[in-house]
Length: 256
Image (cartoon, rainbow, N blue to C red; front, side, top):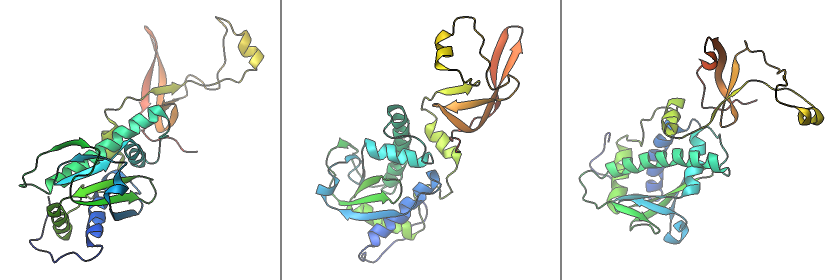
C-alpha cells in the first residue's frame, strides 16, 4: 500500500462514497481505456440480494455472473456478446480476474488485522454496504466494509493510494487477463460467389477459384471475427504447404 495518514476527522455526508470512487477509479484505469463515470451509493441489505459475496469480514465484494461478464466486456474494449455462451465464458473469466485483483487490494488495506477468510455467501457480511456502478458498462459491484475498513479506505485515499498502478489501460493488461482463455484462431483463404444450383452440383475434384491470390497475405480471425491486425501466408516446401504467421495477430476486432 502507498502513503497513508495517521488521523482523519469523522466523515461528512458523501465522504466515504467519494473515497471509494477515487480508489476504484485507479483500479479501472489499469484495465479499461475509457471507464466512464462511476456512481457510488450506500445501500441496504435488501438492495444487494442478487449478489454473491466473497472475501473476509474485513472487506467483501458482491458479484455475480452477469457482473463479471459485463465488466469483462468493458475490459475488452466493448468486444463480445454477453448473451452468446462462448463469448460469455471468456468475458466472465476476464471480469473475475479483475474483481479478484480488487479484492486482494482491499484485503491488503487490512494488513495486521485478524480476520478469518470467509467462503462464498448469499448475504453480505456485517458492515457498511455500497454499490459501485458504471455509468456506461451496465455493471454494478457491491462492497461490504467493516468500520475499520472504511477508516482504512479514507486514510489510504487521503494519502494518495489507488487500487491498481494508476497507469492508463493498455492491451498488455487485457492480454494477460485473457491468457488462460481458449479461443478459435482462424485463417481466411478467400471466398467465391456461386449460385445455389452450382453449389448443389459441386463434387469431389471440382476446382473453386477464390477471390484471393495465394501470394497475398491471409486474414486472421479470432472467434470468427477479423483481427484488427495480423496476417498469415502460405508457405510451400518439399513436405507440402503450410500456413505461417506473417504479422502478429491482435486480440481486438477489426472495426469497419
